[in-house]
Amino acid sequence: MADIDIHSPEYRERTTEFEAEVRGCPVRWTESHDGHWLISGHAPVTEGLRDRDRYSTVKFTDENGKLSGGLTIPTAEGYRALPNEADPPEWDGLRRLLAKPFSPGVVEQLRPMIQRYATEVIDHMVTDGEADFVMQVGSPVTALVTLDILGLPLEDWRFYAERIHQTFTGVPGGGDSEAGIPGIQKRLSETIAARRLEPGTGLVDELIAAEIDGEPLTDETVKDLVYDILVGGFDTTAGLLAGAVRWLQDRPEERQRLLTDDAYLRTATEEFLRYVSPAVGLAKTATQDFELHGEKIGRGDRMWFMYRAANWDPEEFPNPEQVDLGRAPNRHVAFGSGIHRCLGSHLARAIFQTVIREFLTRLPDYEVVQEKAESYVFACVNAGFAFLPVRYTPGPKVHPTPILAEL
Ligand code: HEM
Image 1: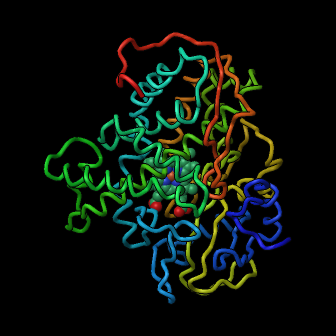
Image 2: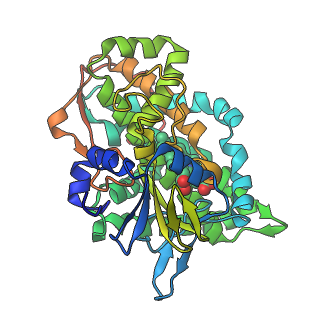
Image 3: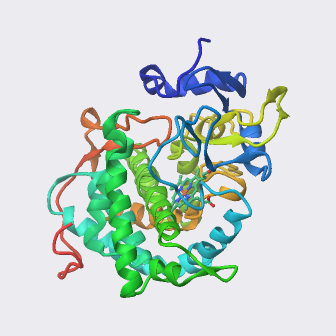
């Protein structure tokens, strides 16, 4: 097989085929983008992610004075996502601050709030007869729930969601793909500075007041933490929902069972996570020389961890290309593994389950307008849809008084 460029149009068009081919040599070098390793099998991906010492996610300046490291290949400039782009021991302190608000117990208590936003968002589109599932259902519910937790203004949901969405729908390396990020950074900096003077209630204020080893966080660190929470959750959760909605449209029996069988909804959530794999791949940097599945990795080598290729590895998942909503065991790595394993995994599951049930209940005859659906252009980082139009028989609103007059 020829050299592989994860950003090439061929890769985008034939991702599944490429991923299967790459798995044939699960630790494989490519010369593209200044050279990096592709880690694709379930065993090497899981092993690598669980290794706390041999990999770094920190950005650094290389010997040529060029910015390197971080989570993307090539390295994205202009922001730092925390705790994702921190290594231990810095990572430990940051993650500890966020662990409780996103723990299973706290998320369980949030279910009524998530339900309220799911109902509200569907109220806004249910009478129309057609809508874009991504920006009118999946993205706004995730955005409103996240802003509620953070204590940020709900009216800003579209400001953040459109800019985050744009980073995944734009052409990789093109001006548009990064255009949204500076806007988010600026808005967060202004909001945090204002909140330091006039505190509100929410996770942003808790972070402003927090300390690590007796030291308060800088505004910059608070911004980088909030940024990671926003960018980490919006399009991944919306992509998972869109993938499920598309798959379920021709399967009325599966839809019915998901509405009535809680245990089935739980295994289905894991199977959609595996099958869709909203986070397709992310980068790390080797911190030392070592051997991985027979290949010699050098200190400073860039490594591309392919979560979706691992989730479709037939050695781990029989018939991986088939969706089996009762699949068990299901040791997918859709949320990553090891220290950087997704902070928002419990929240993402709760949002997914609530929105799927609300959507299937209230739009029971929906159909996806397949010919108009558009996948993300930036296919190697996030799997999902830029646009997923759905048609349905209009139904009634549930809440006479909306939380937001318009979405
Ligand atoms: C289906 C939805 C989601 C998927 C598939 C997903 C996927 C991932 C993956 C693969 C990682 C690991 C990155 C790495 O290996 O470096 C990660 C980390 C992270 N995710 Fe998620 N995510 C989702 C939803 C969310 C949500 C809703 C939030 C909001 C709280 C969130 C916040 C984060 C953060 C802050 C990290 C970094 C954790 C750390 O470095 O310690 N994610 N996510």
